[in-house]
Each structure stands twice: as structure tokens, then as C-alpha cells.
Amino acid sequence: MAPRVVVVEADGGSRGNPGPAGYGAVVRDQDTGEVLAERSESIGVATNNVAEYRGLIAGLEAAAELGAAEVEARMDSKLVVEQMCGRWQIKHPGLRPLAAQAAGLASRFAAVRYQWIPRDRNRHADALANAAMDAAAGKAPARAAVAPPRVVEPPREVAAPDSPARARAREVAARAASATTTGTDPATAPASWEPRPSFTATRLILVRHGETAYTEQRRYSGRGDVPLSERGRAQVRATAARVTRLAPTVAAVVSSPLSRCTATAEAIAGALGGVPVRCEDDLVECDFGAWEGRTFAEVRQEWPGEMDAWLASTRVAPPDGESFADVAERCRRAVDGLCRAYPGETVVVVSHVSPIKLVLRDALAAGDGFLHRLFLDAAGISVLDTWPDGGVAVRTVNDTAHLAAI
Image 1 (tube, rainbow, N blue to C red):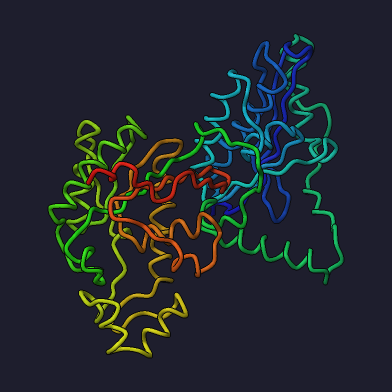
Image 2: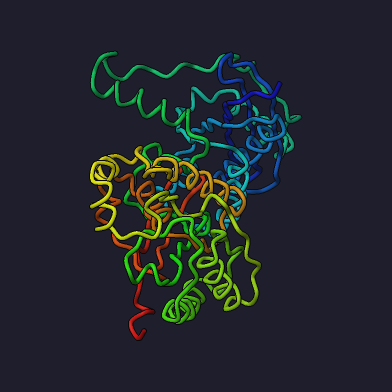
């Protein structure tokens, strides 16, 4: 049976920087510390940082071969850890392809978490790397010179068991462990003011469909297949032109299956040179049930109690409808799937007001009140970047500059 969570310990170095270089990587069972795989290789003349990245890549490849679902990647290279977390820029052009390769491997797992550890806690990988460096220099075969420790050192306690800080740490750890992917819970992502390398991010260009008759009349428009209005078609043409300026090339255009979205998506795909449109059921609008096609005032008059309950909680659904909590769950599933399918690429996502609001709420780690305070125009554009370690950057919300002349 494949291990669900493994620990990857990796290291690399060179004699001279640059000089004869090599790396070492160890994969362990998270629970027992048992060594599941070792990787070690001499790589000729290279720098310390190149060797360190090569060690991380080798460890991730070994974890993937073992069928692991999640990885705890531990290194004593502060630079690699900070760059893979997106907190430090990757300024050296020689490291960027290696970081992109590591990010691509990381996207194969449900989660990868990076941690810096002191060198004395990375002795096994360090020994493998040193043996590989000796072999590169012609001194010895590429074998570890010391017996590796067999058990991963447990984390040191840094606060009293009942302290608020400790309680918060347990909460964050639990949420990270239960997340289906690194992008699911922004609370587990590293916080930083440092600009992240955009080439390792998956960029989602979130587009609300063009206007319909229901949009203009401010009616609840959920699963009913209401077509674009004449004004909506004009908006869509302008939006398609705007998207081509934002992203001249995209990996995919993904749409809700309802026609107001597919018509919007097809216009964008055509402007991009005929990119195929793929429908995703999880991006469909909330099911407003008995409120479909009615105005807010009509619903308030006929269902006052139900309306109050719905406005007070995202877990309450309209009569015969769907709650925002349920919509959020399927939207997370859709976003996670796109990030796995298109790592480091740009994807246009055409959906509805409720799914896009919920995606932005999660990305900004905002509360439910955000849903009632954010206004999204028909044919508005929002841009969201996500990284393999769970980092998120919301770059644009409800851009409508392209609609000014309509």
C-alpha cells in the first residue's frame, strides 16, 4: 500500500561553488521514519544552489514513484525553501528552470509543504550529497560515508500546551492535513510581502458571463438557461478583446455548462485563436430553487423568514435550492482540478457571480460578509494566481474598463 504522507529530506553542494557537485535525497515514512528510498548523483561542475534544487527534484520524483499523496519537504537550504514557498524571488536565471521543474513535480501531489531544518537534522541527505561530491571530484564512489539516522526528529515544542499560540498552531496543522490540495485553504499558505515568481503560478482569469435579461431586471438567475441579451453579446466581444491583451496565450478556456457562459467562453476562445472550450459542471451557478426568476423584493415578500435565514448563513439554502456552502465546496474542487491540470499555465474560467465571489472569498481568506459586500459586474474580469505551496495572489477584481463604451 502506497504511503499517504512521506518526508523528503534533500541536500546538495559543490566543492568550490561552482565545482564538483552532487546531491542526496531521502524519502521516509512520516509516521515511522523508515527510509523508503534514497537518491544520490554526481552532476559534474555546478553551484551549491543548483545541486540543492537537483536534490529536491530527485526527492519529489522518488516520492511520486512511491505513490505518495502528500510530501513534507525538508531542507537545510534556506534559499530553496524560501523560493519554493514564493517568499524570495528567483533572481538567478540558472535556477528558474529547476524551480519550475520542482513546482511541476509538486503539482502532482495533493499537498507539498516546505520546511527549513538545521543541517544537523539533515545528516542522511547531507552524507549522500557529500559522497556524490567526492565522486564528482574523483575521490570516492558515490556512497554515504556515515550511517544515516533512521527516525525523523520530532518537532520541538515552542509554546506551552495550552497557550493560544499552540492552539492556533494545532488548528492550522489540522486544516492543512485535511485540505485536499495546497490551494484549498489560504490559511495554510505562507504569508509574505515578497513578490512571488509568476512563472511558477497557475493563473486563473475569472470572467463573469455577459448580461442577460434577468441581469438587467435583477432577478435571481441560477440553473435557468437564460441566453445573453444584445447588450450582453456586445459586452462579451469587448471582454474577449480584453482577455487577449491580458493573456495572448492560454492553456484552456473552461466554462459553466449554461449557455450564457458557453457563449461568453466561445467568444473568448475564438479571439485567442480557437482554443477549445471545456465545460465544467462544478462551475455552474447556485441553484436558487423556488426563487429562480424572481426579484429580491418578490422573494422578500413571499419568503421573509427564509430570506433572513439565507442572508444570515451560507449553510442555508433557498427552498428547493442549494446553499452557498455547497457551491463553495464544488468550486474549490473545480479550482483544485484546474491547478493540478494546468500547473504554471493560464486558464480562462467563465462562470457566474456566486461561484466567482466564493472563489475570491476563499482566495482572500475573507469571511462570509465578503459575499454581500463584493459587487461583480456582468462581463467583469478578476485575476487570481495560485502556487504549488498554497500561496495565492488576487491581482485584479471586477475589471470593467473594457466595458466603458458599451
